[in-house]
Amino acid sequence: MTGDARAVARAFVDARRSRTAITRYPGMPPASLAAAYAIQDEALSLWGEPVGGWKVGRINPPLDGRLGADRLAGPALARNIIESRDGAITRFPAIAGGFAAGESEFMVRLAPLQGEARLPRNDAETFDWVDDVRIGLEIAASPYAAINIDGPCVTVSDHGNNGGLILGAPVPRDRWDKLQDIAVRSTIDGREVGVATARDMLDGPLGAVRFLLANLKARGIAPQAGWWISTGAVTGVHELAPGQTFRAVFDGCGEIACRVEV
Image (tube, rainbow, N blue to C red; front, top):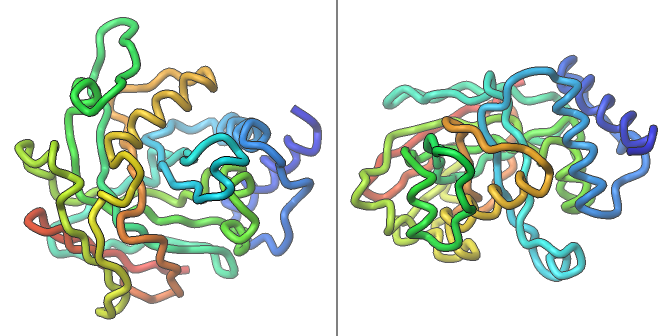
């Protein structure tokens, strides 16, 4: 890792700690996913805090072909993973002048595994790695307002543009193999902003789990039982202004809401 890459990691960690916006990318933007993940890994070492989970996002064409991946990952610190109370609007802090968005997602928890388990190759094998599935929200957040505009490598370099995860009601076990058929409706202040199912999400939420496990292995990071995986935005990435309420209704599974505040 170059000194510039270390400086980028330090700048993002310092900005998140002090809740200060960054108006320009703090160094030379990474040109590859490998360089971007190296910055992300350095940031995690600077935090010195436990990771409680990971977000998985999509890399759209044509950049997926150019970068050699159709998904990306970012860490969620344990202290930024919140259990939602039934019917409550969870307050979630963002950074004034930075980026904030809500994403309606299925949250999957990694189960304890014995010994060196082979990475799953299909949905049936992936179920062995899972012991809980929830409805949830990812708060995509960064001190750098242009994080998504500048492309996937920049997104990866700042924690994958993750601010935290909000966990909602459990998805019944008999619906785990039908996650892709559950309709999700997202609203901002009561205005509908997206309706979709996970069928449009590449190989679905369980495919996101497989991607993450392979990504972590390639980076030398051992998966931990109890980690939550935010498996990808079902209805899209919906930017939020301070004070707006983002709500997601998962058909037959419940609803969950948050308000982003600065």
